[in-house]
Image (cartoon, rainbow, N blue to C red):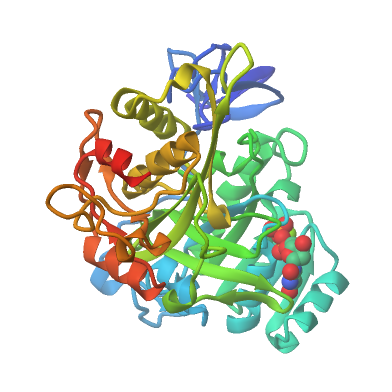
Length: 464
Ligand code: TYD
Ligand code: MG
């Protein structure tokens, strides 16, 4: 039975499910400490377990549609999937082929990372409506000018109302094939509970946009801000409602930006797009233009690796700092490397290389603000930790640079330009070859480096 629930509910900031009662651990996704109290009226149904479920049925009666006879309102037959290009190669690649009509794309990222800039470029390229809730039409106009885009293709609607956006789309009757809503956090959906930016507002607003996108055949890009600590009113709540989820990431003070797809109903979700933020907006980077390694000089704690981002190899620098700890608990700080993966690699390093981790602070970071998910970087992370611990740059490969007696053959292989390490590290300290090996090797060579082949983690000892 549909019924209105008033009072307090608890919303999980990780999975977005709602519960009647607070719990230390989310009963649904098992995340700890993620339930936040939200007061207000939320419409939905409750199941016995006290879980609040959203009614997914709308008032309209559903019809059975034969796909062969699928027609638009006008009576014209239309293609079932109608895709248009963004005219930005990297953007298209991440989306699959391009933008699918009627698709809803969540475009998430930290404030200031460049979401509005890229989406302004998108609208400027293909034409469309920009619903701006954060900036005035004048400000958008200035940006359009600054980016050198065609202002005629660009319609701006200054609004904070979801209903107004949908009303305009209905009134203009399929004039737009693309709409940007910037951002969902500042939009209000009438008659929905909660303040602007609250989980219930964000979800109801998105729900209405999704419905309108499907009904009117317009692609909608919804901007969502994320904060570092995974804000409750953030995009996590919306992931299951939309067709595609894109994350725009990078270091705010650096200029590299990565467009990553974490869900894609219309294509693969493992391609990334690479951009640099310039004076005149975001410029796409071809694979042969990318170089995230700042300097050629090697130093203690620095190791290079090639990670695969989708089908694209990228050489990055891993830096580690290992120092004696004087606190009660040694520090572990990983930036760009998954914390649990980092912990595991430290444990293996303790066992295999004999680093006394209990009294060492460990900091690890990745160049360019890249967030690595590829386990092919494992060996480089351990290598950097080892190199910093020994306070020596890794010098040369044990194989084949070493002769049969295991001695280094002198000058040539002592070159610092050889230490690119790739490989997945197992719990037992074996090093496994990773997918895309040849491509990684080629990328290292393109940037004037050589890949070092190691079979056992313990061989790192021969490199200092
Ligand atoms: P913006 O797109 O407003 O970020 P978001 O919408 O994700 O919050 O981008 C903000 C930053 O980008 C701002 O600090 C200035 C910079 N920027 C450029 O460097 N070049 C440009 O051409 C533009 C438009 C912005
Ligand atoms: Mg913005």
